[in-house]
Picture 1: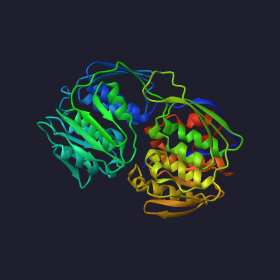
Picture 2 (picture 1 turned 135 degrees about the vertical axis):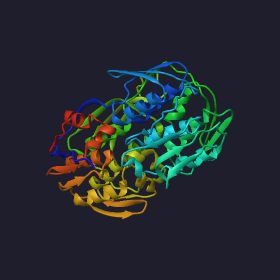
Picture 3 (picture 1 turned 30 degrees about the vertical axis):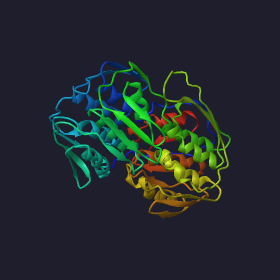
Picture 4 (picture 1 turned 45 degrees about the vertical axis):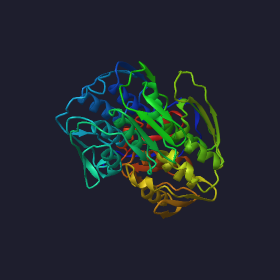
Amino acid sequence: MNSFTLVSNKVNSLNGEIEVPGDKSISHRAVILSMLSEGQTVIENYLSSEDIFRTVEISRILGADIYLKNEIMEVHGIGLEGLIDPKKVLNFGNSGTSIRLFMGILAAQKFESVLTGDKSLRKRPMERVAEPLRAMGADIETNKGNLPVKIKATNGLNNLRYRLDIPSAQIKSAILLASLFTDGKTIIETDTETRDHTEIMLKDFSSTIEVDDKTISIVGGKIFSPEYIYVPGDLSSASFLILAGLISKDSELKIKNVGLNPTRMGFIEIMKLMNADIEIDADNQFNSNEKIGSIVVRSSKLKGIDVPTNLIASAIDEMPLVFLAAACAEGSTSIRNAKELRYKESDRIKAMVNNLTSLSIDVNEYDDGATIIGGTIQGANLDSFDDHRVAMACLLASCRSETPVIVRNCLNINTSFPTFKETMNSIGMNINEV
């Protein structure tokens, strides 16, 4: 773990209009599909974070020419047949999205590749991605289900009809990317809604893909650059501002030009069920297939709820914030059927239970979630468990504490929201390095 420590001091009120950095999920996919496409793509407002730069680095190693200038990225596509043998181990750092999407791409290549990552990523499950790719004909070895992953050369992949039992956009996306290298139609069936950024962007790149409520079908073959992609503000990053505004007194915030993808709205829906004052204006000015608009939040007296199971998947990245919201709410909040949280950058159930307990909140932990009794937060010295979202969520606890909240091991914040401290301080928080 790193030793970078932040202290968040008492908050009076939060106010202002602000934008958040570009969406991480969309930035990953924009780079990857631009690399695989025919033509040249300009990507504006991509997220300048460590995770995205890992995707850029791996794309370059595999043969893509990519140029960065200010908030503009220019990617020269190499097409489906243009990837080159990396001839070295590919290190994905902390980026789970990068490695899982690239597993789908590399599974179809005529060269061998070895994939690894940092200490945290090496603990995350990879067999869930390898299994459907093997069903397509890929030869993949995992290290007892974890990294490193070895993908052997193949002469081609087969089409697949696959039922997505684990609600994961990364698994789904790996299959979709692998299917581009096949000759026929691949079908994915699912009963649970997950992020659909890959499906939306594949349409932008002229892929033959069809989506209905429970089925995705895609025909393999070349994809073509749309020439320009605008990446909206990251709703996951905006969620930290949303909760900060809700739990701080006398506060009102407007977050502009943020992505409003329906598959990402779970956190906002949960907050509304908890009595949050949130207004949404879908004022898309960028001619994007992704919904974009503004969000206004005001101080609210949150109420405890039983979080609906059907909202868990679409709020999976924001669940540490739901834990904190529950700690600030009146009454009891139950979070169940959320076992997937145990397989993120950290065991987020354990991490948030331990930290909320340190903040003097009553919590009962379960295998698939927790029950949280709202109460009075007391400042404490916490640990991020080397997880960027846990770190940022815990720093927001100072919005309801009279005494400072200290969070250790915060360097990981750079993987997804490198301007977090500056952004939060610009609206009235007081976060500093120790």
